[in-house]
Length: 343
Image (cartoon, rainbow, N blue to C red):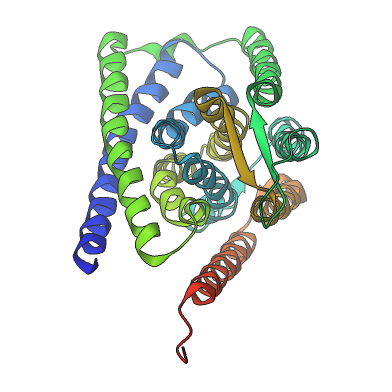
């Protein structure tokens, strides 16, 4: 058992590096293709770069759904969203000498639409519990169906429509396309997708092995281990953008990536498996943390339309509290299932 866990941990480390490599190809190609096609900076960050950097999370959901462990994939999405909101802007803010500049478009469109996405997903889960309750369980649970999964997908369609309107109003600088070989960049993009798919397939299997060995629920394993591994690309994209004085693109990538994860990745998993039964009592606290984290970031961005270093430190502290709470919950769960020493 110890050897299998050690091997699984090694696989997690190796596949995390592979995800980083594939994502770096995918994201750099996405960035250059955005410049080649003349997309505005906010759309580059919130759609193109966000979808590219979210591909590991999407792949995790697809692989886990096909393997009968959608709870792990969903946990990875929620955990990744919390990581993205609290850690990535904080690391980007601390890595630069100046405050990360936001904009009214970012705050009043991207941030508020993301808050709407969080609310829509919580409502969708609640509707599953109300209209498709699952009996014979010790906890409140519901069954997510394909018609319910269509609700967040439709909302993401509205998001794309809004971004398309912004793109139509944008006047591109023709010099941004100079020196970019579009065919070569498309090749890098496809190669990155292939590497991520293979790496995530092995990552999901390794995380399942660790979870079974230590007796931790697959949703919790997704929120912690899988989420951290798949969120690395988002962190690299945002930090690089912040250091290049592209604060709007850095923050837009975080918000756009989370919007894609919540409104597309989770529903795609449900569409694959048809129906998915989930523990509502376990999901609600995580969504509560995600909501509070979103409100915290929105508040910091709205003050002076910038993210300062003290605010970045506060975001990291909030994430540390979240990790501490998850660890305590996991430990208490394992202890509860241990055999009675006195027996």
